[in-house]
Amino acid sequence: MNDIPTTTRQIVLASRPQGEPTAENFRLEDAPLADLQDGQVLVRTSLMSVDPYMRGRMNDVKSYVPPFQVDQPLTGHAVGTVIASRSDDLPVGTEVTHFNGWREHTVLDADDATRVDTEQVGQAPYLGVLGMPGLTAYAGLFHVGEFAEGDTVFVSGAAGAVGSLVGQMAKLAGAGRVVGSAGSPEKLERLRQLGFDAVINYKDGDLGGQLREAAPDGIDLYFDNVGGDHLEAALSRMNTHGRVVMCGAISQYNATEPPPAPRNLALAIGKCLTLRGFVVGAYDHVRAEFLQRVQPWLAHGQLDWDVTERTGLENAPDAFLELFSGGNTGKMVVRL
Image 1 (tube, rainbow, N blue to C red):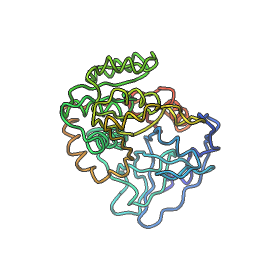
Image 2 (cartoon, rainbow, N blue to C red):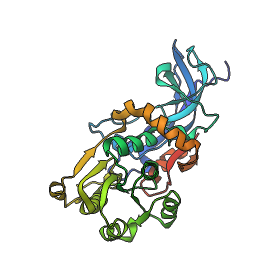
Image 3 (spheres, one colour):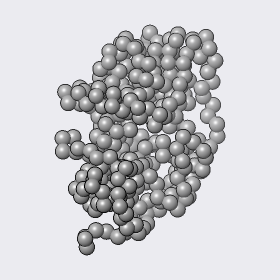
């Protein structure tokens, strides 16, 4: 037992950001590890997730998930290995997922860790296509957006972990046309490789004009990861009885003033649109259905997914900040 650590390194919230976060809002520190109690395990984390929604948790406001606390470690999805156990259900050597990311080791109740099989697919899928982003894409497209075969689907933030899966799932389910927006030629080319029918570089300007050209027959379902000007442009192109899935609004997460867009929300009245927000935590009941449908797509090579990986816990804050400058294609993870 001498090789079992008694301390770990962790990233804590050093201060709450005003506007866009900076490296000064984070701090790397050493922390003691509690002794294991009955029913607990010690996990060595090897891969952790950073996600845009974590920006909201840096603010001290009430939301669907509690805010991070200053001088306390951040949390998030992660994958690791049990290295000490007082649980018959999770012996030493078991690979698990958990929600105590942003630290190299963590003590968990066995009920707070989920056994996973990483031999076939590795660890990263459990933070991406088989994890929270995959379930978000699936639940948002099929349950929130009520996707129908033949739909024209527009996805913003389409090169991200969720958006790239939404577009592919829509194509696999029989979409008539799938349009995606991203912010670089490299990302647009990747979207074409993933099967998107048309792509838009939002940094080229005239988003409405580009969208009109990309979706000449209008949009039936808009999967919104960006908000702001993207939502405004999409509303102008929505068909009657169209559906807007409001998943994220990354364009305004760091805003210090109320965003001006969308300025055309009244279009939702005459077009009889449905705008529906959701959080993935409310759709855990469809997880079995999600896995049953997605795993065969993966097994047959029909569903592709990208990972952008950074190395070292000390680099986790920079990896998180890259999410807001477009530094990731697909899922951003940090290997510890």
